[in-house]
Image (cartoon, rainbow, N blue to C red; front, side, top):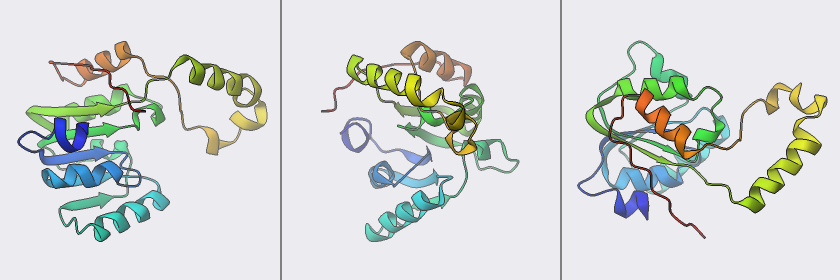
Length: 178
């Protein structure tokens, strides 16, 4: 509803999506954008994303098998009208640097759209239990495959990250998704 209707307004112009995953939101963005550059570093997800775009005849989507680190590459195309970080911020280890990079590739006056899950008390208790029983165990944290984060991000942290990236008019709203 947010991506496909409320935020779409006049359209997204030239859009960038960080952590596109399976392309569920990419498809919504593409219907309202002139073009979409979808960054997705995981090969399995890229395959699903490309298949979705092909099945939905979305010719305006380019999938780039890169992480958010690609934004720092010389020659990375800039001047995006809109950038999206949808349910992927909590997977990033170093969050400040990606926001600075986003601030450089989104044109002045462009927009950053962010959706990040909020964890209720029941979910927080379940994660704490997993932290105490599993995540702290040496065999877990010594395995590189488990180094990706999946932790909480507060409103204050999101606001500070946006400002660090140069996004001045930061508005944070809460929405209930059943």
